[in-house]
Length: 411
Image 1 (cartoon, one colour):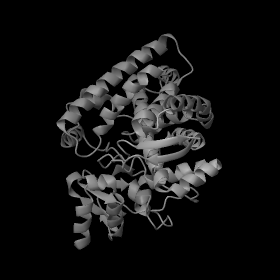
Image 2 (cartoon, helix red, strand yellow):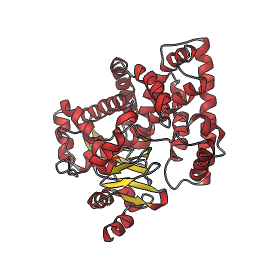
Image 3 (spheres, one colour):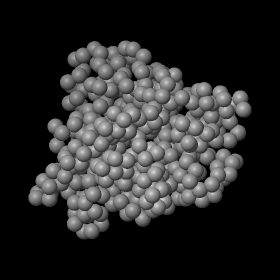
């Protein structure tokens, strides 16, 4: 049982040690002969890429159990603390991410038809213009917080414009998004619950007002097109609001975290940064390696709906599995020298965007953000270096630096 004890001691997602370097714990989990049971969350943690990938792609493994009767569903809500939150229950707990079966497939098809390669490609010029302007305003400074001064402003601005949100409202939407997303992680408190419900209510009221404006005067934006889907009977009013809210939340935090972790990786591996600066055509593989090396969403869960065998052990219906994408992406069974950051890594079949029915629909837009930003940084600044060691966020569901103070020199 020593491996179980060692893994339990290392796997402490709320600790500072885990936040700064979760990969030692992930390696200990992968070394075990079978999945690790994390008692605080009643979850069997999967760390090997074969197991994580198999569960993620299995349609019998669901994120939300819709096979429960109302009494059992409400009991599950109370156990998680997801009760007594009327707006959260109405717009977050039933959104595209939390739905399954026909509802999930129908809503996913609607969003998928909007996030086309052509639509994504049309954003490049606008992203470039915004990034250039933001860097113009910062480049006179010798030192900045890359997260707070730069990265935090770009993804929300981009996804806000896609949806049809005025630029000046994007900072407020980022704040609401962070309040809602924080409540998904372990270690959440009663104060986190209060703030998540308040943010959801304010977020929904804002989107209701924006929807009313678009009803009177449609534009060429995603909100107007989803409104047309509602009018055609393809989605309900609440589904429209919850889907718009999810798109905005997903377009904020995870890309900010990926930008911070990606730049930190380049700073930790200066030869790779020099290589990217000299060969900007490698940006595509470089961005994929950033997502593999430290995925911004390192954990999701699934429930089994049937008897199953996972990681060589039998489990029954209702078992909760933790998909540790952060651990899977460093599995030496697939990746040679997995702890080495390599911008030329090919093939690179990582799981940073999940898999199966819940594969991330926004991955192309996130990668475009990263492409434009890092290409521009390498071209405009001849030197970028750490000003201080970054502190990473604590938790299981997110991965990224709280701040990333850098010094830079213009080219």
